[in-house]
Length: 443
Image (cartoon, rainbow, N blue to C red):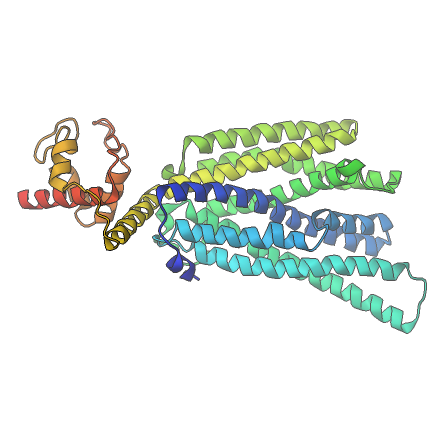
């Protein structure tokens, strides 16, 4: 499904910056929702099955409540799930349009799988509600028994398929976004199946499962005891059941989060590491520590206010986790983003030329004499290395040379970093052509 990359348009540097901001907003909507939905489905299916086997009304009520908390109405699936997943896929298509990464294809399949999971999750919730109503009816006619059997089968089938499709969609989300921050794998990975053997993807899958249980347990405590004064008609028995079903699991999975936050940073390639990545990781661990303190306090002496505090703190941790992910993506796509901006400017200048608007652009020789000759010579070292020593590696890769001219990076520790000259893309193209021509003539 790389056609999305083919129809994507070049973006200016400012537009790319806005795109990363939008990506943060999308993630903040999608990540908590999809992880909460995954954890809620697991807990609901488990406790519903347990309740029916043991004829335990508390388990059955809990299985229904935990789904109702995340799906108070059907539009939530569209607003917080399908639409953000779609927007995420289009954003990655824009950022990765000039790369060989298959992330967009993986995310496109994930979007279809998530849409199927959303449909089955909606059906599962409806079956739980209707089934509860039918079971409260005292009539035992043949027709009523048929309705009950039908709802029971719908509940089992839709719940099972919702979980299966959501697992597949979650894997696609993790695999696609993980590949995007590993530029060294863009050329070699040709299938989502290959990513199953990636340590980074496996670590993120485990982290996602832990994240799902954490946010579901904390969310259940929050919506049961704190949100709008707490749930109505809470009995002492049901209160104890909710605490027993959520507090230990929530605390354990919460305490494991820092380990995987550190691991996610360690497994990133060097080009994806930025200062913002480290700062965000630190803030994730900080907020997780505060949230775990509140959960531990509820285990020692339950206070309803701690449920809200733990939930809000963990949401802040999730927000920092999102920023960490987009910051690493920004580092990984720095060169490709510079090329996108270059293509945009060339397209813009060509359009202006067609309209009869001429832009003054200096020649490559002019730029060399004005900006480059102070630090570089072709055959001798000055402030910077000699061109004869550095240009051979760019001889067959003009794109890489353009990227370096537009976005210089320190490579050789023996020389100071090259300052950004603020060249227009067309000027960068001119100087790249000029120095490569002089190099070839000298050779």
